[in-house]
Image 1 (cartoon, rainbow, N blue to C red):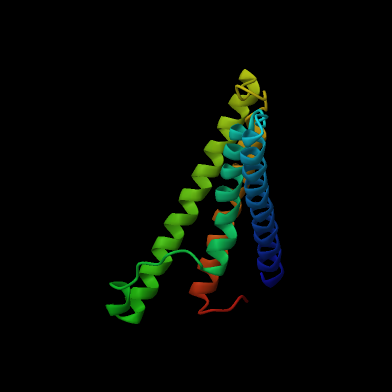
Image 2: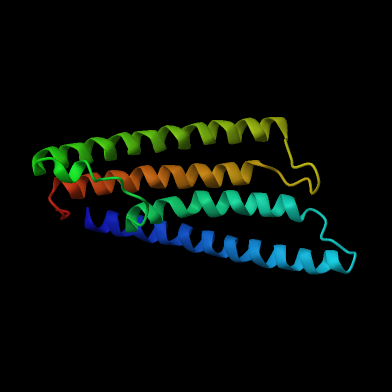
Length: 161
């Protein structure tokens, strides 16, 4: 289980790096577009590229953020519960989250297949939507597995056997 968890951590980190590169791309593209607009030569399709990159940044950052537990926890109520109840509630919410992201990933796959079938592309640059959709599906499925690993670790009291 330790090797599997390490693999998931590496995959989470890889998607996180891609998200960071996407964010850097968005910043550079926006800066360049603003400068070029002031010269009367805007970058055609920059808004589409920023939107695509935004989807990648947000979607690909989720698994690592969950792994590193840098997202927001609202646990002021949970802290007041007995530790066994707190553990049970954490296990329940982690299980539900894992199932939710599994279903979201599955539906992203179905949607991506539908986009391939219809040949849908973006309006300006004619970029197909399905690669982004499949990337988000991968990210959601990876988040589901990440949460599952956290659940196993939680139930094993902080260790993988």
